[in-house]
Length: 410
Image 1 (cartoon, rainbow, N blue to C red):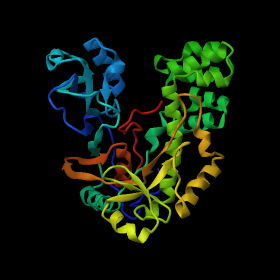
Image 2 (image 1 turned 120 degrees about the horizontal axis):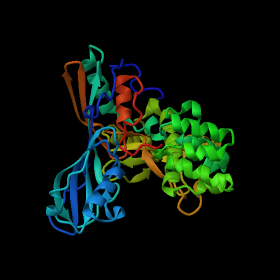
Image 3 (image 1 turned 90 degrees about the vertical axis):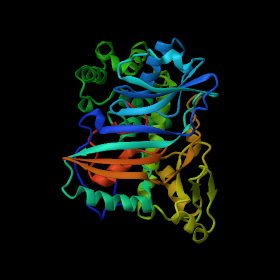
Image 4 (image 1 turned 180 degrees about the vertical axis):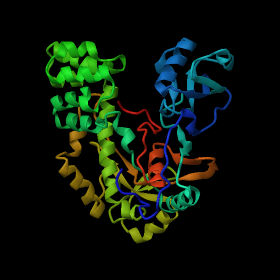
């Protein structure tokens, strides 16, 4: 993590994630089901399952296609998470007897449409921090007051970059057309891999023994195995990499977009709440953006947290700022030897880009001392990450890279 917005304030230290119950994530729905319609909205609680795992299990239990199920956001496996899943052409009585390991259906109600990604206001987090500083309540209270005033840096953070921390490097290599480097990064550096089978597979890959590597990958490395198998059968690195599931390749590209955005947050951290000439400002009420021509006129709205400066998730369609803000955005592209058009890849991989606020509001903050633990609760808008708050409060990196609203990248 880069510098802290609250660097002048001491953190509370402590440790995270002693057990799943220490981290609860609950979606804040955009709307409630109306009680009638062709889609059954399931309010579920899960533990030890990703959202995709839950979709798979529910599809099997309800004898329907997984792609017909809807969800608003992706949730991690190593936590207790509550979210809504929609199922077509089912009634509440159809789910009464469903019993799935790690998944409970808390409520079921009908609605008129399939739930779509983004159909949520945000997420509410309840996190227990073990063995914090003796003055944790006072320290955390002061830090959270600053965050409520200035905003939470809207970083993606390390959890966006996968178990090996290299998902952004894979995306960068794909954009630059260096497919051998992309393949090497996908298979992984043996020194960074803890799983013994995966580690041996990566070692054999590096020495050119592809046949041996194929047989050593563990089950959760099916995509890596698929890549090496393609190379073993004679595909060049470009064909082998682009032959991987587009959904996974887009995650790598998105990780690189996220890393570039985080760098822009860091560049503006000392004036995170200030509008610059040429900025594209974000309206927190509806997510629309507009160009700032006179910061002095618009700054009072930023002080009230009605609007905030933005930075790009770079893509071929994104609009860059002008003036001083635009110079930062263009200089980072130049440094990376990229143009916006670089993100216009082949079918299924083109990344249009978007603007994203540099800061987000934190709401519903609550602190409670529970013996040797501090329980911290707060709500963030959709697409924002709890690690951004925890980093400021704890002033220590989160030990578990899976503290995320979204599905972590592998």
